[in-house]
Image (cartoon, rainbow, N blue to C red):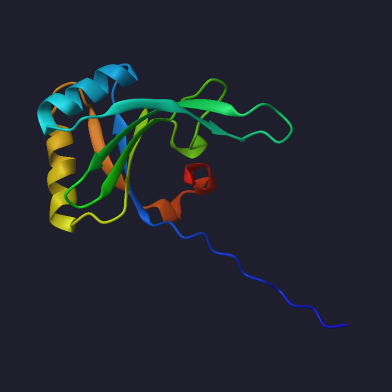
Length: 139
């Protein structure tokens, strides 16, 4: 009997920035809106099935869209109602996910602008392919 193996690779077509701060999610979004001229708006919580057979874990979610380039920004809490979105990165409090196209120069400017906000301890670009639990970021 012949066996065929299918290899499945997830298409990670987004950029991820880890943000560390002690502030609440709404306060960080307010500061990003103020300093970077964004307009993050609260969305329904992101429900992720982390534990098999248990209720989904809820994570706060904020959204913003650059209409000029159709780039979507998602500000997601790493700590949810009953666990972490990315358990191997417990030091990161939030993630800024950028979907669709963003220029490398714009991305570098965004990271440096986030690091200039006094209340943000650190903002670092993360390679999504190196994260073990990257499936949690697919929504």
